[in-house]
Image (cartoon, rainbow, N blue to C red; front, side, top):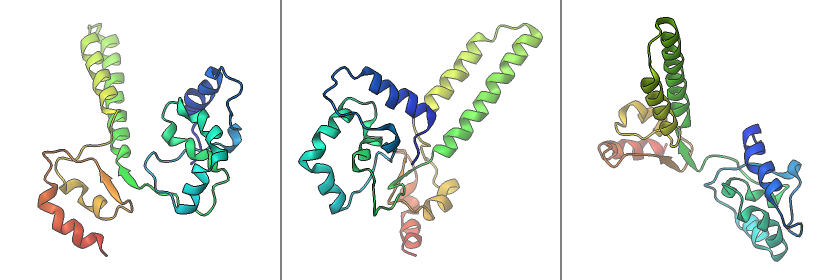
Length: 180
């Protein structure tokens, strides 16, 4: 996938700027791409990756933040592959919740200004809630609202279920429909 501006600036370019040893191979930015951190490689790509002449290229990624989402760039151009999520994470839910909390924060600021009320603690609590929520994909406790999404998911794995989720109750249904 294309590297978004934030990733490009905060991960790739900032990493390049931190490189002190000019002997380390630095890839051309135009050949870099982002990929899922969870992936499966075919035998051909695995052989290419572990070839001795790629080890110096991998050195660039050793100290890079979340390099597991970028290091397959050493295989550029990557041919004969299927790009899909091996593991599904429901980040759309998180984004929707973030947007809702941001609206609450905005409304709290407006309320604070309009009525000259100290709402610092309430706003800070909302910000902490939003920031904590943003760290992980949706955690499923009750499977029912997500059942259709789980059944039609094309990924091999679906994440993330709480230890207290009721997934066991729906396991047979999920297996039955996933084979179709």
